[in-house]
Image (cartoon, rainbow, N blue to C red; front, side):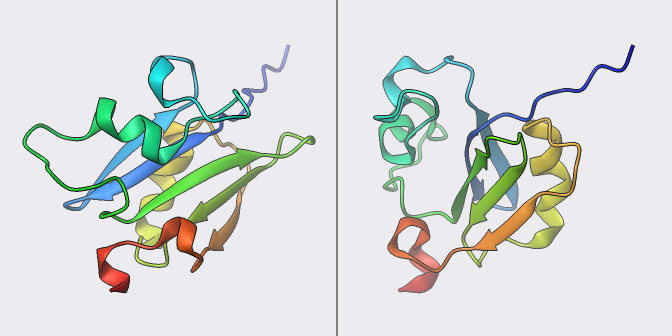
Length: 115
């Protein structure tokens, strides 16, 4: 029997060339978004920011994985995140199929590199 893994929603940051990924699984109760089915970058940041990091949540390039009703992944992310991170993002969020990638230049994904 073929077991299809359902991709996960969640958020991520790229900090110092490393991916910090948080697939939504309820691990961090203080980071849950208003919709209740994914994380909010700003709310989650205090729980997950690296030790000694005194930067705000929106300092580093970040992104989010959304899942459509048809179980297709859409990745929204800062244009400052290299496509080289995509295989790792796909692994962390259990994305099997090629996701739709949206390099989002909106306020949502602005970081220090946009200043």
